[in-house]
Amino acid sequence: MIAVAFGLLSGAAKQQAVKRLVELIEANGKRLDTGFLAVPYLLDVLVDNGYDELAKQVFLQEECPSWLYEVNHGATTIWESWAGIQPDGKVGDLSFNHYAFGCVGDWMIRKIAGLQVKEPGFKEFYIRPNPDLGITAFELSYRSAQGLIEIVLAEGKLTVTVPETTTAYIKLPAETTETALGAGTHSFELRPSADASAVEPATIG
Image (cartoon, rainbow, N blue to C red):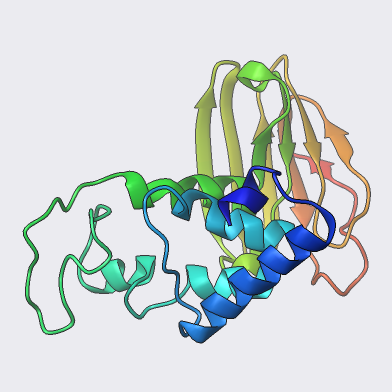
């Protein structure tokens, strides 16, 4: 999987590796089985190779090992081990505030909210939201070197705030082209991916 993420495979070899990864995840009940080194790349590899639905199922999995298993067992920070608290309630001797598996937060920002840097310092950046990955309402605030970037999705309405002196390039679900946005607050109505593209943006601030 890391070989795919790092671009070390191409053609048939890449396809075979991705196919094998999918088989392993399916055989494991749509649960991940990755450690510190590989887990940052798992969901990206799935999405980037067309397995959005499987990525969503892994992301929203509630059985151990999974992120939501920790949440459902009272976690407010990420654990060092997926099974820090066993299903029988036994507590492990480990850290319960350990970043490594928290890399999923980076994926949520880039792939669900869709905030991705284009130029260093966010002078230019992309907004490519994908609520089909499992979160249909969210609020993201990021204080970049250029100012506050905000992306909010609620009840099918997407609102984005672009700081002064920056340009955002937005691509909505079902669209094939990007739209450049200048400074200000812009609003979009999102439609299902199978529907027509979103309406033209309305600047509201």
